[in-house]
Length: 275
Image (cartoon, rainbow, N blue to C red):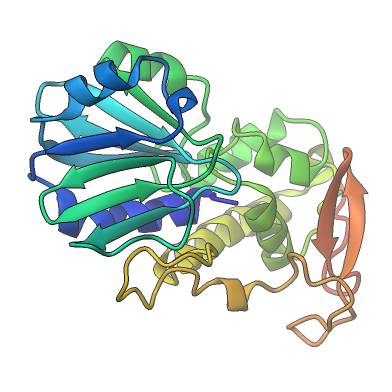
């Protein structure tokens, strides 16, 4: 599943290949990927250049030279591949965008590509919480927001309101790094635990971005980075395996109807309430 680290990794890598290059060809294999006809979609993109790449949560946003935006929201099984010349991706293609000798391929049947105005984009992203790496989300503001929340930690981390872009994999990894059970009630966290959670969020996401996230599909033929964090995951989908910190075997629990992975020795509930 593509979460913040995967999309940020894509943003950083793609910038060196497709920025300031005109789009000269567009192909949609799945017409449902966008909300206009394939002809309208191609006509709006061909001849345009990409000035800037942005990420909002798990949205990858192309800033075009006419002031409009192209938003790409990858499906759960979605991935990107940037091929050179005749190179083809190792997946079924849903969309192609050509930048001269480079072609960006999009996979995932439910992946979405939307042409948007600035106002339209703002309407889409305004429901998201702050980006974990934005100036809005400081340690102080994070703890202050936690004090206003209720419910299980895992659900809060994946809810996109406290911080945008975190899904199940990194929610479990962050909880482990903070030494907290995914099921702990956030209203019962003390100040020390809340501060530790913020540090874990920052450190886990930063390390995952630097290591190329967890997607196993390479981004290019010469790519040796993408997916590098997969081997570093300490609890996610490691049920029955020994904890990487020398604790007990990783177990699985149900949190609000979703499975979550944790170490029963390294993670625990934390009380008392905020003071």
